Image: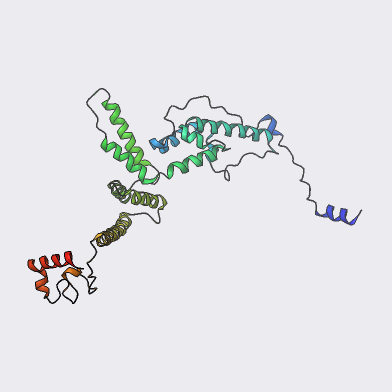
Length: 304
């Protein structure tokens, strides 16, 4: 054996130890194949309806009744069977997981359904949906409450149905993950009072609210602090605007007269009282009198 061959054989990985297949796997696998034969009767999961809490609870109950709820639990605590030792159980587990994944996707609105495309396991789909709906935050909650407050129910045959919808919407709003509380409600109402001209402020505050955490929340005091900062910017803008107007006014004003005789400002040569001027030898008062002006005009007309 050459030296190179000797080194290669010494560094090659050790072969896997032989695997013994569980003899019971073929006769009675630990995981049997299950089928979901019924149709979910609740509403589809829809972010616009904020119905994650009710939807997820009902989906879990249906899966638990079929013995499939385990597919929504942590894999570190509830792992799949070993594919080498229990190949049939592993195959059944995989088929069941795909069935749960399809059941979840079928009961989602189109936006949520599209979001799950390409995600391989039921648990990953579940966690993706949970994250999507939990991050809605107080903005969505207040939006639901505001819509309810703005709704008017006419006296008609459908009034009880409409009132039930309003009640259910409000319940969903208050049951959303994170739960609306006094401070977030105040902040959101303040946000919605901002009128035209506050587009940038509104966008920034919404971003700050979404980035807030339980340990570092965005409060109404933070809102007011930002509003005060924005007020200072408004004052600066108005001040710079006034300065610009003043500069423009000065720029457009009539230039001061300059005497071509004595080179001084505020009068012209016909009214100049210096030697060579139209009012030479006169006093300033005399040059401004009607007679003086008439003489200056005559002097300017016939001056050679």
